[in-house]
Image 1 (tube, rainbow, N blue to C red):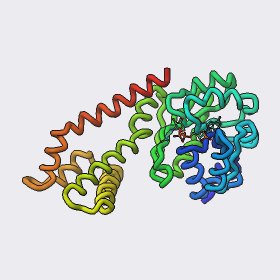
Image 2: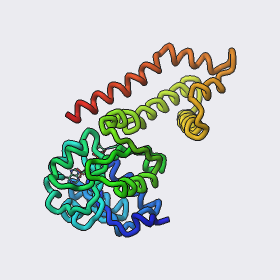
Image 3: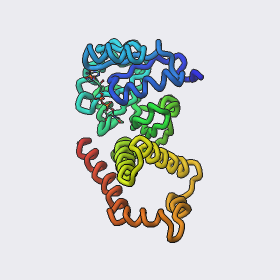
Image 4: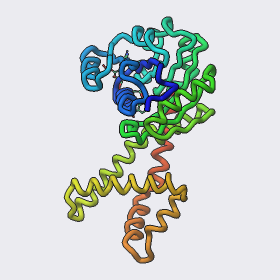
Length: 275
Ligand SMILES: NC(=O)c1ccc[n+]([C@@H]2O[C@H](COP(=O)([O-])OP(=O)(O)OC[C@H]3O[C@@H](n4cnc5c(N)ncnc54)[C@H](OP(=O)(O)O)[C@@H]3O)[C@@H](O)[C@H]2O)c1
């Protein structure tokens, strides 16, 4: 269904890389926006041509042109490219524009200050599973963003997964470290579990499916039953059974503290990059 709020809106996605193109293709595939209302940009002509061909969208290398033709601007360039892009587009931004920034470690204040305009900015931290409608996006409004701006951003990201909103932007570093980077941690777990299956004789392709579906199923159980993960774990762990031996090996390897440290370390890195 085409969204009533987004139906007439023209959207520019500046930076049709991994996350920008995942979002663009999902928005079109889920009929949240019409392809003719979406313009993308990239840094190079070849990548623009390739993205245009692959997603059936207009993809340019001219940010000014894309912004001038849009009402919602999604900034999906690398954090280090942000200043350059903001400098390029600041004169063409109109007061009614909504900017949604996806860049890690770039605050709404950074963008507002650079633009020197009272433009509405919403910071979003999505993740790549947006591509399969299983994304997790956390939103945080900037100084000039009103309720309706946040609502538009919610509608965009709700079409590709779950959405949460926070007011304290300082927590966006923790969000980046947990759900922004989280899929990478999960891929390592899937890969390692699959190796375990191979070690005990399962064919690799079957082993990978077993590992991935087990993580997917467990994640759905947590989200859909609202039970504490520890209780769900206890339900699988029969006394003197198979699972407890597996858990013993996991605990012996320090999995809990490793995962806690993973998020802690990545949060520190995000804070460092924000400086
Ligand atoms: N990947 C994720 O899982 C993820 C999740 C959440 C947030 N983010 C954030 O999203 C942003 C993009 O990340 P990514 O992983 O998608 O990076 P990426 O794959 O490297 O994509 C960056 C894109 O920006 C384009 N670009 C470079 N210079 C540009 C310019 N001057 N104007 C317009 N486009 C330009 C690049 O085009 P060329 O290839 O032609 O240079 C490329 O299409 C980052 O700020 C990141 O923090 C990423």
